[in-house]
Image (cartoon, rainbow over all chains, first blue to last red):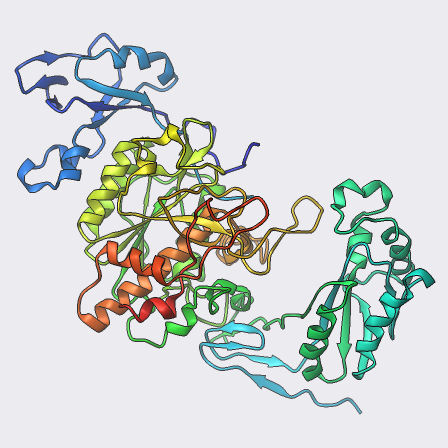
Length: 119
Length: 493
């Protein structure tokens, strides 16, 4: 049975990202737009996703904080990022490419969010 | 000569004849009446003076008339103002119906809207004090589905004598009332701090009408981008109304109306990022404050699930609770069982520290949105759409909650005067619990000088709440937990 909810407006004002979780020994250098590992490996996503794609930490304040000041949950939060594709690009079409990035432990299309209201 | 009407003065913050009111109002001395709902299948009609039935069912009418004979009855009339032929016509249709028929299955047999409405009878006694006795006696009679003293409306009010005001909807806020019906909020407000003083609530969803007449000024948007859509705006407004609407002679009164509220949309950088919203709120708030997550999303079975299913959101919630902030989270309306194997090792089977809230059946409401009028279920049983499972900690009213927004109860050209009687879902349940948390933490700070840990707050809510009930098709194994009972909970602060 379909249960009605309050969906997002269909005007495209809210885009759906790809949500990714980094492997624990990788991080993203936001200045160089390159992933780096503790072992010295690097990976540039350039060319694997459309031009204009933004790759951002989900919680930048945790990502850029001194690790010693964070609790275990905040340290875990540092591993989550979003790949925000240019308007008009379907995230599902790019999921396979992003999953193949060496730093990525898991990736999925961002959740389809709604309000838990009954009509 | 017409008798002069006397005025009845109700008192500040009391459960009155009209229902709960937070401030003094003067109501005219209008007569009480008993609203009787006849069973669909009872072939009983009525006139101004008595019930009647064909010979085969004469005893059914007689049992009702025997009750009326004990009292001085002013009149009886159709609650919906139907004419006498429509009332008489119900007898023929009723005689063909099986016990407790589902209206939509019998439309062709005449079970239409007129028929359904014809079963609602107003019995008006000459003495208002007889009304509860008549209701009590009629409730025991076979032809009656339900009889109760009709609620007394509170008149529209004028604020400061200078501007016309909205109606007072407080009497219909049954969730404020004592257990087992409500959470007993109004019973604890006299305790120092127990209206949520010193507590800030951050509501995370999409949009709000922060200039609504019944909300306090200064509700800050602390980050994110609002979703510019009326449905989202009404939703956020309704949520805030349950928790912090102003106690005065118009509109509603919030459960924790001395608490402060801030809001944060889950949209960050043009996409949903609920984890960021929670993290931003965590940075803004302090220990003892409360975050409310009023969102759901589609899970692996294609049904809505709670947001902590996703790892980043789970971690953000856990980080907030580790800092002493209580997180209240809607379980979602997916009719989903969180204990299924498909959810093993996900946030739906782990403890994030959040208080996860299911939707329970309120004591007096009905499904009435498909032109039928049927009972929604056993009070405090799981409403069919509510998600359930071991991580769902507590429940609250998930149907027809009176609050701000939408405009079905009071509309108008300005959204600032809109009210609803029909806010529903785990959406309506979660702010009730959030308000309860704010009351408890406000009390803890006032009494003990510091707030309780989120774990203690959750334990108190669960251990003192009014237990979940089973209902047809919704056994207790479909766990949504008890409904908060603030008077009992306050004893453990």
